[in-house]
Length: 205
Image (cartoon, rainbow, N blue to C red; front, side, top):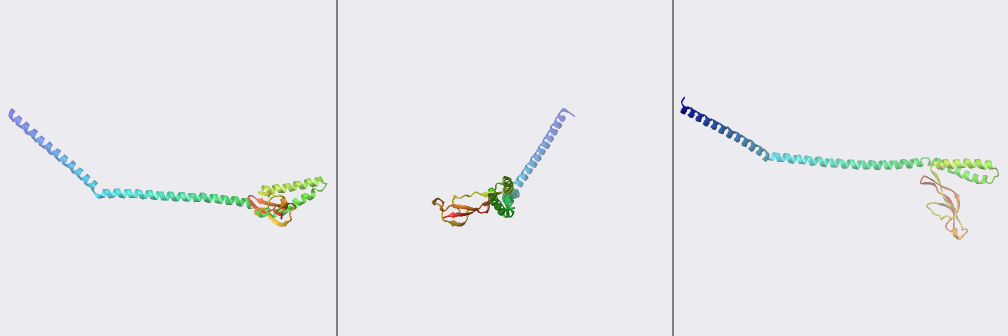
């Protein structure tokens, strides 16, 4: 093969290769553009927007449901706390006044002991006086430990219908005792904060 023929062959081969390469790149670019156009078409379709809107609506609905359940829980918790406080208070009140009937039935015995102690103090038998005082004090301390307390009332105090029970009225021995307590006939008692017997008094008029 002559030199000229070799040169012609080489030029032909290069031209052929260049044409093939250009054709391949053109096809590749075309495929890329087609894919891009398809993606843009998919993104531009209303279906994607609708799907995104539906997802946002579901998320909003879930948040609303969560807030509702949280509100229900807080209300239920508050009601339960109020219930515990109320039942605790009722149980405490019941505990304080559970023995009210028994203690009320013991008050006349305590009154008899008070009267007996005053009479025994007139005796000259010191051992008898000491023995009765011990029993009397023991009874009072036992009842006190159960919540019993004496309502402090004395002659000369102002009469109060909310705290005293007037059984009779007498002419006041002095002007200072008018409308006031002249004498205490029977002691009053409380069990805890509850009055179980009002003091019976005589008032001056």
